[in-house]
Length: 124
Image (cartoon, rainbow, N blue to C red):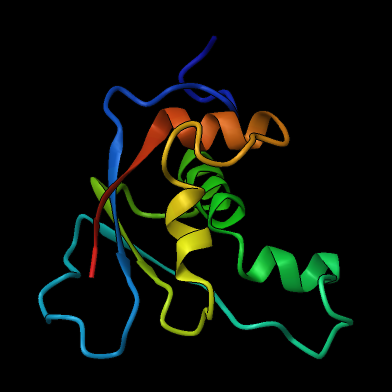
């Protein structure tokens, strides 16, 4: 598979730091760091349901895959680590579980690509 293929594996797995509160230590950013922000839902939903647009805003696998795609297409600067701002998310365990291999099921090739190319480094 070519290096610029959508599901190609990076040479090394990228560490991901998940920030769960607004008082995270400064200095997490940097030239080699990509920052991804998980957003709260856009609007109210019935209990146990969420629309596709709102789900994508809070799905760390979707956002990391999109970041990887932007890098592949030259639309993002190269990075060696990622900081995920999850301070707006009420269920932080769902965010971290999505980054632990085997914790949550993969629903498509996108999820497998994220599992191969990113790993949970720490939760702050």
